[in-house]
Image 1 (cartoon, one colour):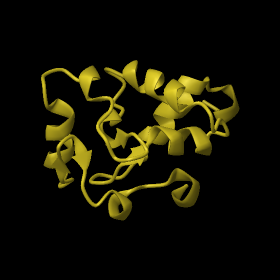
Image 2 (cartoon, rainbow, N blue to C red):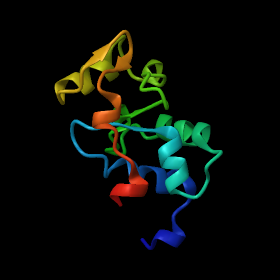
Image 3 (cartoon, rainbow, N blue to C red):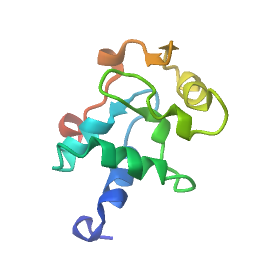
Image 4 (spheres, rainbow, N blue to C red):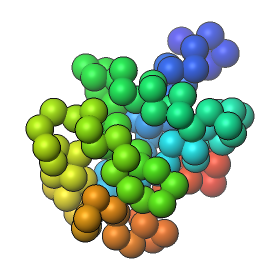
Length: 109
């Protein structure tokens, strides 16, 4: 499928699928990359609907590194468990070393 034919949610999924293992990005970083800087919340809606689409939504956190989307994952700590299984340190629902492991699609893609 050509990029210009993808809808916004599909574009979000394509970017999220490129987040490297053990790295995180933010809803806003994805929105900025897609040219929709004020659409971070819409990125969140898209990721909430990504179940079954093989999208690593657990790698997307808020701009401060908080696991703000964790309530959309099954179980109490699934998002944290997925991140920790990739070597990401999480304490009190916040990614540690956020600046160090942050993946910015504007710089990386």
